[in-house]
Amino acid sequence: MQEVRKVGEYAATQNVSDRSEPLPLCVDLDGTLVRSDTLLESLASGACNWRIWRALLGVFTKSRAAVKQEVGEIEPIDAASLPYNEELLTYLRKEKARGRKLVLATAACRKTADAVSAHLQIFDCVLASDGVVNLKGKQKAKALVELFGERGFVYAGNDRSDLSVWCHAKRAIIVNASPLVAAKATKVTNVEWQSRGPGLRSFEMLRALRPYQWVKNLLVLVPVATAHALNDPAAWINAGWTFAAFCSTASAIYIVNDLSDLKADRTHARKRHRPFASGAISLTVGLCMTLVLLIAGLRFAMLSGTIALVALYAATSLSYSLWLKELPLVDVFVLAGLYTLRLFAGGEATGHPVSLWLLGFSSFFFLSLALAKRVSEIMTQPRGQIARRGYETGDAPILQLMGIASAFTSVVVLALFVQDEAVSLIYSSPVVLWFIVPLMLFWLCRIWLSTARGYMHDDPIVYAAKDWVSWLVSISVFGTLAVAKDFVI
Image (cartoon, rainbow, N blue to C red; front, side, top):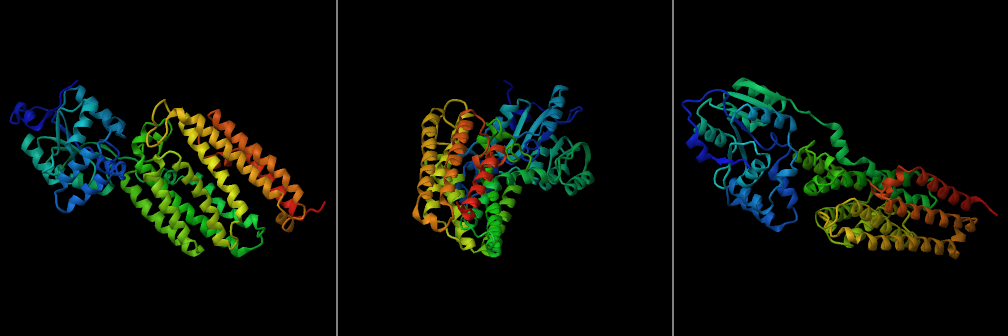
């Protein structure tokens, strides 16, 4: 294992006055060597830890360096799972192979810097914030000049604060910098190498919204359909605003969920490719997107008159993302409740409230789907405790039993509804509704068979939206409702 020397040890062996090319290459960490911000990652991962919040409040009484050190101690990063800039890393390894001295110079705390250095095994020296000095901008420039002399090093950076360092560097390596920062850097020093980066990644930002999940928000339209108010334009308009409110709010919560799940997602075979886990989008951009989406969602909710329900949805979803998802069984009941809340919001917005029969059916139905979602996640994980979940892989069989029992119970409630006397007041031929019972039973059995076989890689409703058999069942159900309403035997 290569020994990483600290500043004093390195300075003692470095003859600054007699130094030949190539010059030492000093590399920034956040936004340069990694496509993320390690401090924000620690804050996101520890958002539910009261010690993190206490540390943040210390910014009013302590220095930034002290706060960084405390956060790094409370919530250390996993250096092996960070989204490294592979293009820069390849360049650094080539330079190392030809004998160049590499220095990790970062404003991150010492513990984070040492962890990254120990993982990569390419750095000869580590400079980092030490709890007293925040090694950023002018402070970093001062430390590098003291160690290597004026114009005695090459520096790799990415943002505005790095301009203070480039002013004293012999040459610059510009990584993923904005055009303005890159232009200013070329004015203060020569450029040795430049990685322009991907620019604005609109597609990745769209992916972060998870638009395919919006299909679940179509549940707000169900009260209009079950009330047979398809010719009510006002109901459709309000349902549309409600749909937009839930889509915006849900996407904001998905981003929060991704930010809080960075560590867990990076160990997952499929989720590690998500925009934030892969470093395709910065955490700062994610926070800004969250704020904009929440404001838009509340605005749409005001237009539909469902602001209280949408606010409740946002608060519950946020609690789920940060905390409740780690509590076994509580998590699936919350998921089922969030599905049902969409029905309530649709009924409130359209003026067609959810009936007790629909409430009873949906409660068991959505609990079954929530359990299917959790079982599918458990089955894809290696044995043992699952990250940020309160389950172990051995829990899958009992959860399957619960889910299948909930599925059959929901169909029993549907059967009781079909034979209720009140149904004859709504439908011309209520006996036709019995065809829905085996259709729903068949679909739920198929969902659970797909889950058991490992085909369920998405939320069950999202899975159904991509499944032609589910589409055929849905068309058959709505066709049966239409026939039962107007057809007389």
